[in-house]
Amino acid sequence: MKINEIELGMNVESVEGKIIEKSEPRSVNTRYGQRSVADVILEDETGTIKLSLWEQHIDLVNVGDTVSITGAYVTEFRNVIQLNIPRSGTIEVMRKGSHEQDTLEL
Image (tube, rainbow, N blue to C red; front, side, top):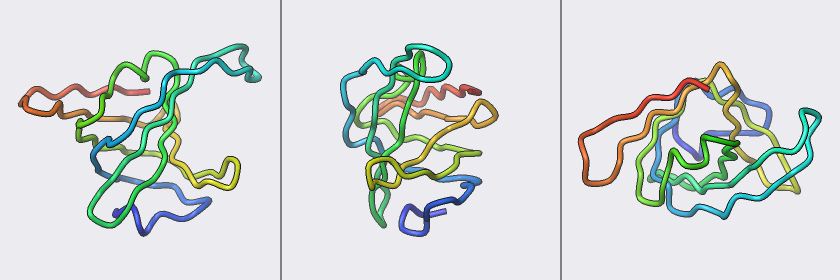
């Protein structure tokens, strides 16, 4: 799927893109207690979308990495559509300038 095809409420089977921006982690209160979250901007040739990363997954990606995400869903927070990866989803990271791949099941 291409980023420009993503709409609110969708389940996204698969999307690929490059991380072009990454925020500093921040602490938020959730129903599961206090957790760290950071936002990244994912880009492909059709557009950009925000992707929320939680806890240990924050350090998995860096600006310049190309990622493949499967099993994500789309929500809206503060009028911005964003991707979220549930525990059943995966993110595969190809580091820039490397042939090494890391797959993490969330």
